[in-house]
Figure 1 (cartoon, one colour):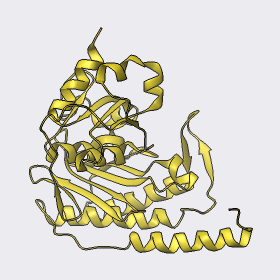
Figure 2 (cartoon, one colour):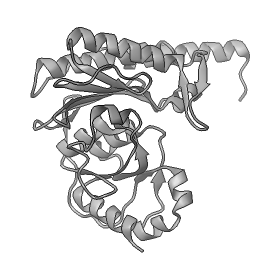
Figure 3 (spheres, helix red, strand yellow):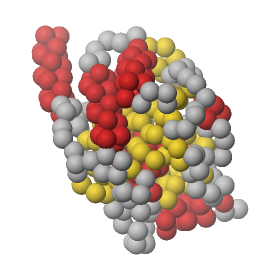
Length: 292
């Protein structure tokens, strides 16, 4: 059914109202590092509300690559995050997708993705998120991914478990046989069509947001993720969720993603192949990926 321009505008306003209610601030029982985690959750959720002020509006965009875009919402939200982190954690360096690394880390530092799923965001699809992670000694020690359109907040502190809101995430680590839902880019399927036969599934999902896909793996909504190249801001928080929920995250070489192999500055451009899921699933995907 087609709507008049007026009806479309009214529908858009109603959708924005409903989405703003979903992204309203909520209280969480914090864990582990307590105040640091609580501040990080607040910062990510405030950034989510900032993102929503742009959603379904006309925003300026430009192409970064043939298939990747950046919008004024991405840049504005990263600036918002940087200011909030500088206020809450003075002196800690920040590596962000849009503006790179602001200083050489001396101790803890942050990795941030202001809007993961920009193409979805620009298309009006509610599959995007804000993701931040705190790094220490080459490992993500704290992660938060906030999904503004659902109001969901995934968070974890190393050694203290992963949570969706106040619900603890625990992956099913028993081998249940057939793989049913695998997150994988369609370009990877086109380049390596034999992979699906080796893995034993044709149930491939591509949500357009690696941060969201990794959170969904930790929550059991997807069984595994296989990605040809991810930036650190795409995977730092999500990898921690999966590890704390009982899963594994490996590079293509078969080694754990953490500790990082390179200095922070290198991750401005470094992309890493990732396999993530329950331990048995990671092993299965690694075997399929290395088969002759």
